Amino acid sequence: MAETSITLGGVALVGCGSATPAQRISNDQLGQRVDTNDSWIRSRTGISARHVIGPDETLTGLSHQAAANALRMAGWESESIDLILLATSTPDDLFGSAPQLQAILGAQKAVAFDLTAACSGFLFALVTAAQFLRTGAMRRALVIGADQLSRWVDWDDRRSCVLFGDGAGAVALEATSPDQNGLLGFQLKSDGSRGDCLNLPQVQNYLSLVAGNSHQQGGFKPIQMNGQEVYKFAVREVPTILQSLLKATNTKPESLDWLLLHQANQRILDAVADRFAIPQAKVLSNLAEYGNTSAATIPLMLDEAVQDERIKPGQLIASSGFGAGLSWGAALIRWQGPA
Ligand code: COA
Image 1: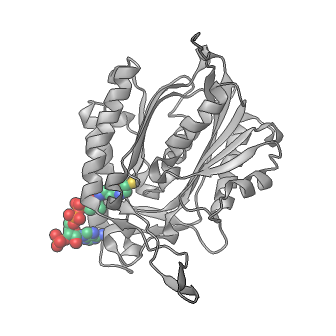
Image 2: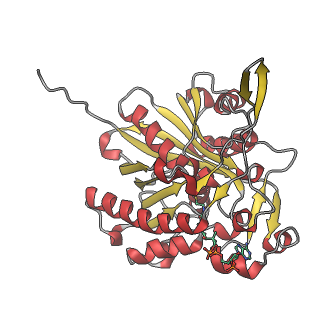
Image 3: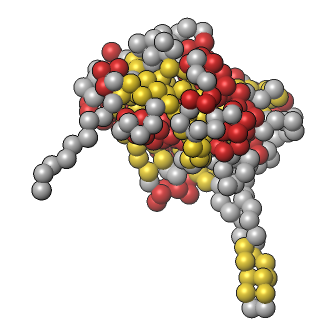
């Protein structure tokens, strides 16, 4: 049989945007709720505050703001979008929030769906969207990472509640010629056998349905986390996958302009940077202000650094996401920005 080969095009990141809730809760404020304090939280995590969705805000609303900002930067009309991929584990609607986002944006032509991979969600969605564009099936995609873990945190569990916040970030991704490709490589991994280190499991609530038959009423427990196991997972797997990606793409650590990791803990960022001898000045971090916003961290951080012109067009970024699943991944990205 004759061999078939597909010629892939490229993808360019041409816009980004973000949005965070108005409510800001400092470490000292959290200390009024649970037995913790600013010095413990900052020294163990690098976090000083987090933003929490209030009664008048929704995940879809935050995602809309982030997406609209990305559209504006890219200079796109919403009718020109082919795909909206919303990476979230905490949709407003369990059936998916992306279609509501499509409607609010007025992106009638776009197919819109959610993708769930916890804190790795944005990276997984970016790579997924890129496949539609690189094969020529679609031309323009909006990839959003957004989460509202505050709805699922046990605010009386000091071992986990201090870590998380809410937010949304978005990237506008466009099909290009192969020589302008901005997604230079990626690797994605899952290991469900270690999933119980970090999960948001269903409550076991069986109710009688009809005589002799029962059903489980839907509902979830708060986030369950074994912090030390998750920490060990991150400092082992993130350097390993980055190493493998750099090797596969023939990239030397010193040629990277930025390290853009999932923002979970400053100590994890420092450990990964040390492993590759990447100077602190090249390690992007906004943990202090937002904590861990799950699928939102990477595009939120990207947008902040593009807006303040730290990240410039043409620069090379190594990114890695990791979290519940367990799931983790890495991507080598060249930021293009708007034409
Ligand atoms: N405030 C004050 N004390 C706290 C506390 C808090 N918020 N949370 C835990 N402690 C206490 C513990 O009770 C323990 O006290 P003890 O020694 O008297 O028993 C002590 O601090 C040390 O706890 P430990 O769990 O060993 O701390 P740690 O150094 O492992 O730090 C994490 C805890 C959660 C910060 C750290 O494990 C971590 O960041 N893990 C990764 C979590 C993560 O990133 N999750 C999301 C991934 S996407």
